[in-house]
Amino acid sequence: MFLNLWLTRRKSAACLTLLIGVTLLLWKKHIDNENRVPLSESWKYLMDKGLMTQLTLIQECPWEPNATAVMEYRAELGECCNASYLLVGTKENTPLGSTIHLDGHRRKNITAYSELVNLLSERSPLAGFQYNKCALIGNGGILRHSSCGQEIDQADLIIRFNLPPMNYTEDVGTKTSLVTINPSILNNKFQSLQGPQKPFLDALQAYRDALFLIPSLSFSSHHVLGCRAVSIMKDSGLTHRAFFLHPHYLGAIRKYWEQKGLKEIRLSTGFLFISIALEFCEHITLYGFWPFSYDLTGEPLSHHYYDNILPNAGFHTMSEEFLHYLNMYAQGVLRIQLGKCQ
Image (cartoon, rainbow, N blue to C red):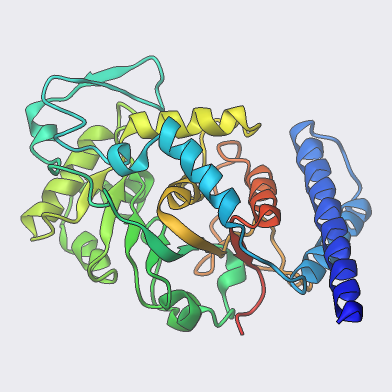
């Protein structure tokens, strides 16, 4: 018994050392990128190889959830941001004539006009809900060939981002509770919804009974497009499944993380919904959250599990966000699935 305890403590100490090492390497990588420090390809390779080795070893470490730490985050986020009430625009929190402060254009406002308010639900679809197991499915290439689909489908709340393809069921599962639709998807993939509506509506069918969340009230150029999308969905029988993310919530959550040292032009959708999950979920697991172009063995990865289209530079700092994920992992707040699922 004492030998087992001693071995467990030694393993825990080694795991803590690994986490510290990974954090330092990621932080150096982030600082070098931010300061545009010129590094030789051989030095980059050595840094990245060391990082992958340590992340691989961390996967062997025991991980235990920390209910106290989760409760602390939930209390802080409930006080500052209150996703249960403010996550989506409703007739309750956005009455006709009220002022909406755009979190993307921080000096611009719009007035809640009748066409917009008529598209809002009476109250938030998540108000009063709590979930045991939550799975957040990032779109990273590391999900391909992960065989995580069955494990993902066992979660009580499953969140996906930007209408990702669902024809990789062995890796990503079949079920969806919430899925986001960024205005960029509506513009680029569905021609701003100016043409035939069938391709858009067909794409929504892959998510069965999921709720659709659209962050279209952040910029003045997006709210008309968002209203068009929700109108089409409601006219097609999706009356209680389409919602606008409230910009007041998005602004509040940005300030919360700024106070914790994360300063970005705009939080990624994934990071935003991790914050939301912290208010609603007891146990959180991240899948497909991976800011690197190769896997733990050094094999190259596509940017997404379904394509290799790269994002616009400079909007999100994924490596810095990944540092915060690792910090929450170390605290026992969430679990990060990086390799193949068992």
